[in-house]
Image (cartoon, rainbow, N blue to C red; front, side, top):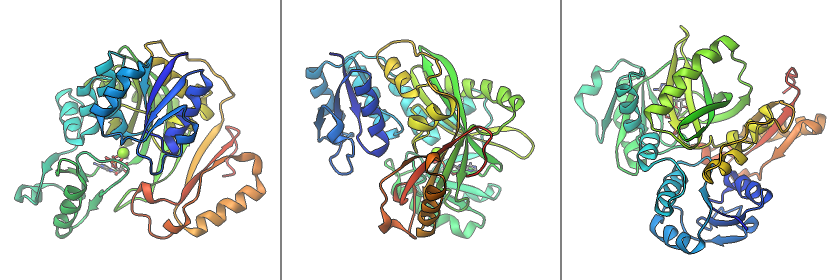
Amino acid sequence: MKKIVIIGANDFQNQLILKAKEMGFETHVFAWKDGAVGADNADFFYPVSIVEVDQILEACKKIKPDAVASIGSDLANITVSRVAAGLGLPANSEECVRLSTNKYDMREAFANAGIPVPMFYKVDRLEPYLFGLELPIIVKPTDRSGSRAITKITDFKDLPEAIEKAVEQSFEKRAIVEEYMEGDEYSYETISYKGKHTTLAVTKKYTTGAPHFIETGHLQPSGLSEQMLKKIEPVMFRALDALKVTDGASHGEFKITPDGKIRIIEIGSRMGGDCIGSDLVYLSTGYDFMEMVVDVACGKEPVLERRREPARAEIHFLFTLEDVEEMRRFQAEHPEKIYRISDLELEHAGHVTDSSTRIGYYITIQDLDDRSV
Ligand SMILES: Nc1ncnc2c1ncn2[C@@H]1O[C@H](COP(=O)(O)OP(=O)(O)O)[C@@H](O)[C@H]1O
Ligand SMILES: [Mg+2]
């Protein structure tokens, strides 16, 4: 029997465990026990934190897997790349993972490749030269995700606190301060195999907006024109090359400025979280993205084949009890359009501070031309 090691077992990663089993793999899953929704689905579950790379690698040398994979998590992605390298299995290089998880290194790689970037600085405290930046600006930890400690600044008096917060959240205790780019936000979902990239889907992204930009929903297809989509692909592929992405899924966040320019926010060399990679791509295109990730992790060329009719697929995040009520109303009226409702953590209602403290989510699917949600 083929074996796969999966790094992470939370609600989002659980979908990969189920997929790998469906594909006939024996699943060996490493994750911290708390929140490990997928633990019961795994054939073998190891309660080891995903940051314990050496310990996981040692265990994997005994398991002798055919592939190592994860979806949708930067932290898990770092471990996947190191463990795969230690076992001689296909994955993006450690350098690629560094460039695609550290927001400062990423901006530098883009700038070196001639890809337009906003003005940006790496800091660990307030520096006088920052006052030379044009407002608004945005402050973020260099190496976190999930909208943690992100602040949009429209008045310099708020800058010290924002930097302090971002530095505190950062693993390397650094913040990146960069000029704010206007425009609607989207993400770009691709699969790469031996350095060749294939576009799978484009996602329209909805957030709470300033100051913290927590995702409220994602929709596929994006509604962008064919002409715009043709313009975006070469930009994203160049950016993937700049980050040395060769094998596996990627998730590129970008904005289209009011004058039609494409500006990259960040690219992760892993599937988009928030069910974008694990569910929305499959529902909106029919392509089995998770199967592709497993295939590439085994060194096999991914199969681009529609397994279902494309649909309009959307994930809606729940922030308040009113959101939950609205979902229940929609569910009563259109039960056939509900694809999944997550577990709900109602105690988070009213104090959502980042994407990990949302109440839960639901995914809707409907015909491509149906706009009822
Ligand atoms: N330079 C920027 N200009 C405009 N908006 C930004 C900028 N940087 C971040 N944002 C907004 O903040 C969100 C989170 O920032 P991001 O760099 O993607 O961090 P995270 O890793 O937490 O997702 C983005 O999706 C975007 O809405
Ligand atoms: Mg992001």
